[in-house]
Length: 311
Length: 311
Image (cartoon, rainbow over all chains, first blue to last red; front, side):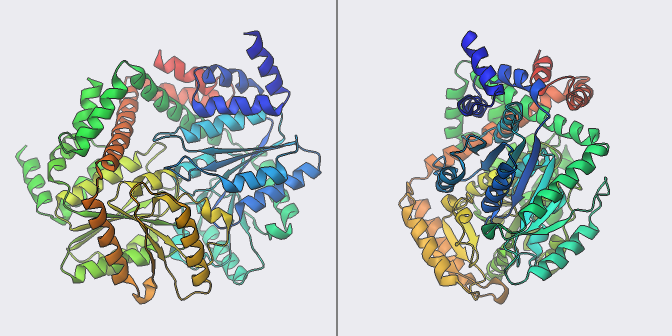
């Protein structure tokens, strides 16, 4: 396994190709992914992991790019993981990422990787958290996890970050749905991007009102930062807000939070492994294909079918 | 089990309380939920299931409410399932739903139910699809599944509907992120809501351009409907567009699509059941709690821990 040890050393040294290959391994759920992650684990815990989420159209990508530039200018190495559940049918033609690669990605101090849904039960959250661990072990100072969707999985992913940033835009707050968007409770820092647009004050007031209703167990009062990412405005303020929450929670008791995250990862991984074990049994995949067709034809139902498989 | 048979008869007769109780059962993953769904299954396949998704703030709730009123006026019975992954910490304070209940829900021909994430691995998609089946068996003519989030799970859920509607608003299209929002490919019908706002023509043009790039295996050309839900405008057009896609796909060969959905449901259910089996073993839950703490303290890693559990 000399070659593997060699490439693991390269990973720890932060070599782009070794890092990319390792992420591909965990993304594909390769056989040796588990061994790789066990080796990676002791080297993690140094990077500041920033989760960034928000509704489509809020300008998250620009914000992430500008933040990455800001850190890079300070001599830091930045990893970006973009979680993109889009294109469930085609597997994803990620035009935007290619554009970003060409402006940001040619620098060895910036690593960008898009992670999309693979198949029906992708293990996307598990793969994303693994990828963050790999970048951490590879010596990146900041790892930014950007989610494109705002769903259950994306919320779970962002919660695993050290600092979670929620991005809003003016005019969103006037809708009761914005309250229900599931992203209010996870923000350690809030950003109102496109802050040159009409309605920014109103959105800020409404956000303040909402946040005053929230009860955080740690009594942190999430700051609201106004940015215009496309004009590079407010980026330093954002970085300071991120830093200040990071310092705050580092001093506080966050073992409880980390235990909750560890439990979630454990259950995710366990579930993924259990399914993989069953599917690896001789003929099970073919049986499932056949059963799916019978269910579609109303000759069987999913509940009886699952019981048959488990028997 | 006379009582159970009695309540199952009530469910088939569409009695609100029996329906609500059945949905609670599948939501909580109750022990007899599987038996219930096996009994429900043969009675399904009559309702037209409409999935509605779109970014937060697009006005989906209003649109759904107006569409429900429209069907109700035509003498139909409508079930609404609102999939809300919000409030991952508190379990959800669903203010908006209470408001809607009070305007729509007092009518016996309209059933509204919100389904939120429960715990870490909620089985939300499975529970939602089960709830749709229950409403279908209970004789509702239309079942509307509205998702609040726009993530991986939400996309999967909406894909299981007979007709998927994607709601946009003017001004969203000017952002490359809107393209990546993962919702373009799943729409059978597109709605531009808030069509009295500036930029509606531009959004329509951009949407048309995007749709012309998409390749649908069934050669359906998704219509774009303009609505102002709050003023009840465009609702009939929307209902006609939904109907026309429904007729189109009913005549076409959709066994392939239904087989793919069945396979997804089968795998989801299998995964959920496998995890439940492992967790029901004596002491496993306690062991996982302990392991999670060890992982948080860096004394163990999730990969080794899962292997220990599986041993």
